[in-house]
Amino acid sequence: MRRKIGILFLTMAAALVAAPPAPIPVIFDTDMGNDIDDALALAMLHGLQSRGEINLLAVTVTKDNPWAARFVSAVNMFYGRGGIPIGVVKNGVTKDEGNYTRKAIDGGRHKWSDQTQDAVALLKKTLDGQPDGSVIVIQVGFSTNLARLLEEPGGRDLIAKKVKLLSLMAGDFTNQGPEYNVKMDVKSCQKLVKDWPAPAVWSGFEVGKTIKYPARSIDHDFAWAPKHPVVDGYKAYMKFPYDRETWDLTAVLYSLRPDAGYFGLSGPGNVVVDDKGFTKFEPSSGGRHRYLTVNDVQRARALEAMIWLSSQPVH
Image 1 (cartoon, rainbow, N blue to C red):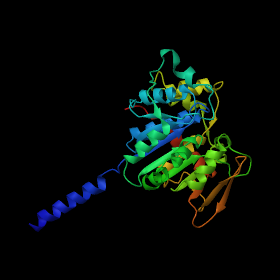
Image 2 (cartoon, one colour):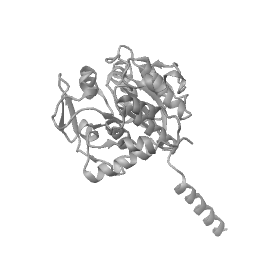
Image 3 (cartoon, helix red, strand yellow):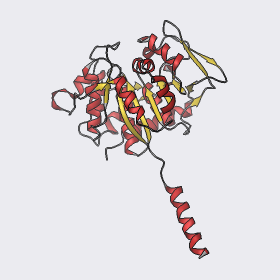
């Protein structure tokens, strides 16, 4: 009898050890269309979902142009996940079409849908349906949607209850100037740094600037797909071939693999945003913010991971 109980215990223990972790619930907030790194970051998220590491709950868009959401829809549909809800900003700060969203998918080359929701309403509904302290929010555009969520009745409390981490590509912590995602909607970013109740990790301009996505990967690592919306977008964004900075990809990679050693991390503190969009980090033992650092060894490792995850074949 003791032997049977022992065998049963060992079998149960082995099953517990072998059980994979549950996929991480993720919300992706993007200004898709202003730069091509947003598209590669979304491809990374689909690669991570194909590997069972995440569950992409929703994509919210801070670029106020219909082709931004349509391109997101085309990428989601390409990966067989057209049911992922898409939220769009109202009265956003950039309304132009951009260089690639329409060019990559118009004319019947890729399928897409115009089915969208209000971004803030979608954020509220999505967060409300998740376990407490479970959601990772990745912001790689302007802070418009998240600042408006904070202004909603109960919005701040909902964030505090549901969000585990905010990972954002924003700011410049080398004092070189105001970074684009911040300066285009300074008031929203100021609202975010002042009132966001969950931990936040910033990937500044200086991190992604030093890690460039190689054109050779676009030509070779995506060759499994005769027609890929991200490849078409990359080639439409500017004259190909070119190597592009990986700003938004760094925010994705750190947030979902924080313990893999791809980046270093500052001590705790608080980010301050001035009226011109400059970001300053003030160290504080009780601060809610940190920012990423990177060395040469980490750059090589991070780039390899970003290439393989973004070019992960559909399955």
